[in-house]
Length: 116
Image 1 (tube, rainbow, N blue to C red):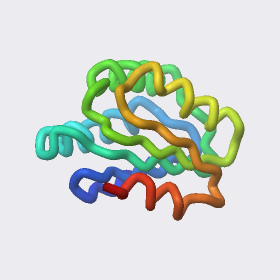
Image 2 (cartoon, one colour; image 1 turned 90 degrees about the horizontal axis):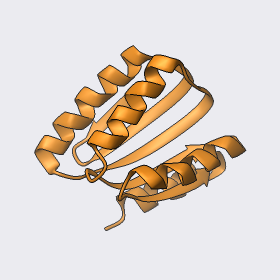
Image 3 (cartoon, rainbow, N blue to C red; image 1 turned 180 degrees about the vertical axis):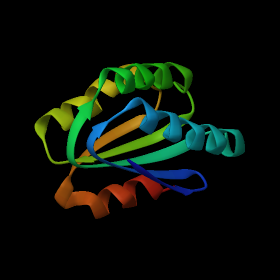
Image 4 (tube, rainbow, N blue to C red; image 1 turned 60 degrees about the vertical axis):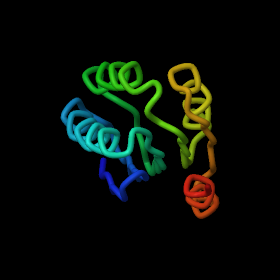
């Protein structure tokens, strides 16, 4: 996992399988951005992503509950149908506006997430 922090916009690139340590690093970055901006936008790009191990999944659940109101928009760019399903499932855990984009529409995802 790598995170690009551009103030209010966080770009997260996920590959392989996520572990608890990945999430702990990610959460610190998000919390600093939330403290500074109150609300953030996230562009999540998945490439050859294989999900979470048990520790990372628990960290994800805790993150979702803690930051329910802090994410303004979430764009998910993925390659697989389950990633699209995941974007839909996330709507239960946030007040954010969420959209899924197939990987060939990555430029459109960035445009949508940065639009006023």
